[in-house]
Length: 281
Image (tube, rainbow, N blue to C red):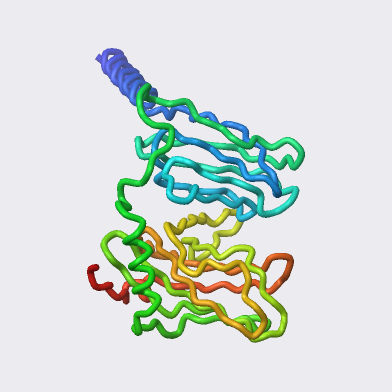
């Protein structure tokens, strides 16, 4: 009887291990291979995807990425820093497919124009956004945001006589409009290298890279590249509608070309929800 009980327990244990092994096999993740991509500081790499780009995540701030203006399936990539360390780029397209790239620096022979294999045979090479039906409306609403008297207070930073402020947040349909004023109080011209929007983690965990998601503008009103000495400019950035998850914030970064007068605004979600609805055209 004792031996029978031992055999029964052994059989049940064997069956449990077998079932667990089968379940583990079913749940095993399949590996998504990454493509290698060589990019440069002085040249732009264009990647044409088979479907509209929905999400972009870069592994390092040493990389610049943006959608081609008015197009939804072309991504433009270049180095923000010469000789950067190897990093990565992740792109998700409208068909739910994830693309992964390992980026390396090559100033002499970068890959300039790439087309990814299509998953469908028919269709056009370039895809325009379905969400933004008419660019003219975006431009007109940007003007309304520019002249609107409603202001956001308290979002201002100054550095080396450069005042950088977010003084208006507006919305119409699926687009948000950010009114940003840059004042150059010095006598030296301020050449703009970058004015960009990121969603970042509030806290960086030790030995872990903070995830950074860039929000690409749909349209920019008064998009100048230089603020003359003792002058100012007010921009309006039209961005896809978004809110900020818990423990994250919106970083608006202004960087000087060939200079060190860099300024950054950190905006929390409680400020973004105080948005003004623009009247319908």
